[in-house]
Length: 337
Image 1 (cartoon, rainbow, N blue to C red):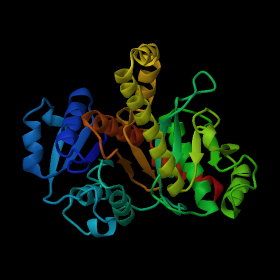
Image 2 (spheres, rainbow, N blue to C red):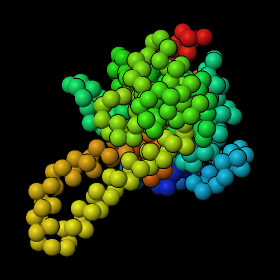
Image 3 (cartoon, rainbow, N blue to C red):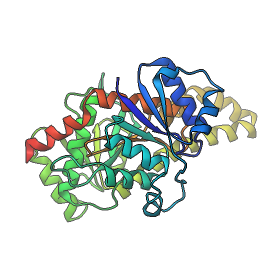
């Protein structure tokens, strides 16, 4: 089984929730984990919960990176848990890393210590999100990238995002021919300016992927595309909007119940649907967002990650290692060079 390094000090709830999540992994699987952070604090949490010591090692370091720190300054902390963990993966001590910490610092630390796959221009942060399906067997989760590793990018980079996302979907979601869409403001191929129009032309002519053309905002919740490609600025906004809508639905339902008896009755009738919306949008089930394009794997968990979310992130990271996601991406890139 692969060894997964975990940033014990990262996120809003580290080290407590992070260590608890890793402890649960040690009881349920054969995955080896390397907890990176303050050993005394890590050990104190482990002493309060059941765990299998045979599957957990600790790599001590004194420092940590805060969620609000400036990424470029933060990664200068050579003894910070995030930086030490990324170096451990680069040195071969672990096969992949999970962190719920500062997103910008995660991306920058990987850029400093990991090597891009041959031919890759820029890495992309990918995230799954729930959507309706159009046919039996279609994955209820779509993959959106980039969601934060870039701000702006050029057409060739968007094409590479499509290849990377397709490779990830084939390996992790077990979709042999994932459908790829380009997020745009209209379905016409010339929409969105020169970069998106150029990306559309390149994707349409690209062998090895199933390109379904431009997808608009209202297409995101349906099954038209399994992999949606966009610049990081737009992808991050979309992802946060999806998370926010789920929060609003549950809040509205909760407030309505308190207002009037009639509304309370109506919410009771709708309760099953509301629970399903909340269940679908529950990020703790999905693990985290893989940073694709490097020779090594990095999974960015949500900053608010609980033990359950960390547990699932470690399992997804191990699966991505076992299923050789970087190799699949490298083969796809080489095929078009």
